[in-house]
Image (cartoon, rainbow, N blue to C red; front, side, top):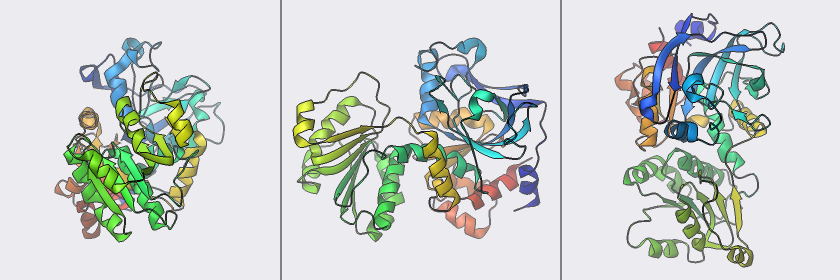
Length: 418
């Protein structure tokens, strides 16, 4: 660790002002960066530094919908403003006089953003992580999970999406006898996480019967990204990876050739109800459909009789619980999981909106990590970072192969921190 990075990690001073992204109405035209005084901390608050924040498609939905979003309909966006960002890795830099003594300056935390007991959430009506320095009041304290080991900032931010992935299998996981898995709409960041999980389980010997994984997407670019990223891993495990566009002629024939008896397990990452309901006809008897995408309430029709007689399992997931996040965090701390496999691009504070827009447009095929303390870092795919930052040779080689790591993050921060 360089002295510069070491100094940053142990610098708990608080500036007078902070950069923050605020939403005041629907659309990207109403999402803007401001410099404001650092929010004032009360006796029951903690003041934090935002070290990294993963960009989520939920952020896109918030910006597009604003006050029409289900979580924000009773919130005064124009005056109170929304600060998105819930995949947060923070360091506490000050604590109020009445705060629980378990919170200490220098402690690192991640946040379980959804607080169902209170009907609220971080990154919605509670300001989130797209700020350099912020305050969490006592409502949030119960939902802060302490980082016990010195893992990377991005590794910590990516606990949240990975815990959603893991939580989606809680009720119905892949089985040893499953031969064919289908990831519907699998070319995006979350779909690729499901793909990575599946081949990792095969590698670990937990899916001995797995022979085929089908990934469908309407984007040729996303399918190409899946091919580039996963082809070698699948070949090493003797599992066939089939990449199909469901809009092209021959899709039905291809599916029936790959899985003549049907698909054992499907993960629906597509948000179009008709696409998901149509996919059920490809499930085998006793098959499972994991409804992972953000499908609007009240949409989609299924045949209960078909589900009953074909003994199909439908399981839904729209997030994770604090126990899921803590479980995944500890796995990362024990090096049993590396959440950084999901990182595809980095962005600094001033280009944050550009990073979110790229996610909205599907231009980034893996997760984008915001580094609020790097104001001038442009939106950059990690394989292109060596063009703007000088890295050690080993790290440079890894980056050019599209692999992010705590070492790469550390060298980037050391080079770019003021």
